[in-house]
Length: 340
Ligand code: ASP
Image (tube, rainbow, N blue to C red; front, side, top):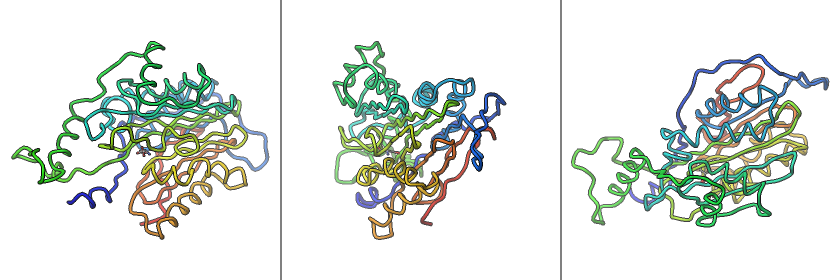
């Protein structure tokens, strides 16, 4: 496959770790409002790995804890999983083989946000984003400055490039072109013959028992990206948006399109104007598709939750999974795909 077709082909890395879900029957506050069936708390996370994130977050949410601590705990578990090649340690590196992570966090009740972009060597970037939010007068710190900020707060420098991720990167580099000096091994496995760039991220959004909303988006971003490339994940309004009066939204997939459409912000604004989370997500996906003449040959996904704890999810193409933990337990669903 030539360079162009490589770049035109996008795959939504699904993540790993579909743990056994269980239901802890505690602390559901039935909302008094007539016609509202949702109970609180509720958490929604993107991807198959959302199940695992929800389980961790529920240890806080289910005991009446606040949504901010819950989403951080949920996201940290995925960031610290070396088997997950889309987030934190084990994430796929940039084109030079270095892992660069992006993350953002928003606290609804505090009306505050924090983010880090292109941070290296730090396993839990969403926790650094939280410190940017809580311990600085800034919203976003990137690159070397983000690393120094994390080290100042006692985070440990780690090698985030696992052997599995390094080998995937090496094979991508070796099979990229026959006009350079890199050769793949003679015994090349079928699956390694045509490695494409992949996406993979997690959004974790929660409404706690008090109706307070928080969210996180954390990622290693587009695999084999140009060093320094930032996607939508660390950009408030693109990969994540939270408004404590309305709800929260998060995006995964091709970040460039989500940045151009202020995707997560638009989903929340749609909910503010009366759409359900499902309608709000589908509306923004349609906008992205329309911007591409009705034929988007990439994947973008949105998840959303409103203040009542109702959830929704939509993507350009079918196959996007997300997990919701509510009074029905922790369940994996498939979002609505608007194109075949
Ligand atoms: N949206 C992320 C980015 O563009 C990647 C992803 O969600 O998979 O960096």
